[in-house]
Length: 66
Length: 257
Figure (cartoon, chains in turn orange, yellow):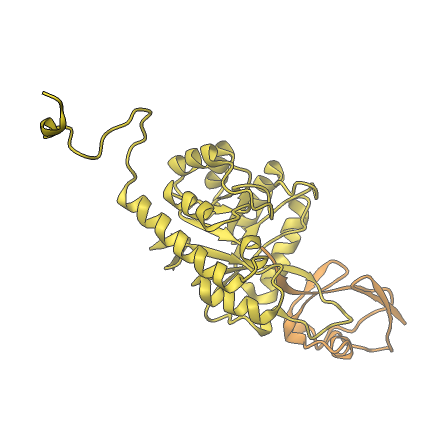
């Protein structure tokens, strides 16, 4: 099934949790904040949130800025 | 010592972390600046370069991280970014920035006030970036802003304190700290802001794009200290007429009698 992450379409298998997906992207889960369909996902939900077809996911982190 | 909300700061120089050529240069520039408050922005993770993480090089214990809402075009977007920043673990501190016009990056006063009111209610410590508007500064202070951050000149322009007249009024009226933010392009600009009584300055571009950013960070640190010391010492009054520094009497011996 398909989800959108940071504007790009990604294919994932059924029952992929948020933390699985973040790791598949080779990102350390503790370095990002996640928003799914406009809702901020708390860190302790990363392991239990199962991604659904059509979810729009944003993975955000701090970058240099003024 | 500078106090904003419940935190005290020895250094009155705040540093932005954008546009540095490398993480190593950034780290050294922060050290050279002596700054204790560091601004950061929030952006999408680059899925093609997932290991690129500024927090790898910055010590959260040592510095207060002030996330900004850069990129927000209205209050709604700014509030969304603020909540993401808090969820990312930066605490409640926030540099509120609402800049709808990409050409000037001038802040929207109405949306900034709206967002301040909402974010203060939600427990954020809000430092709004504003045009140098004394009335707006008062309104934000009344809305609960922890400091106000008037611009010296538009972001990244290095034009200096072209808003000096208005910033002086803001300082005179303020009950919260005044941090001159944006446009300061040289240490002398920062010194001037401090001499007229600004509580702190926030500098980014002038340091990050300098030939030697580490040396420039040190130069700004000295300028900020000098400017603050001059303000505390009390500047002499300006006059349009000359006033001799040397005694006017005792010159009879050179005069033709």
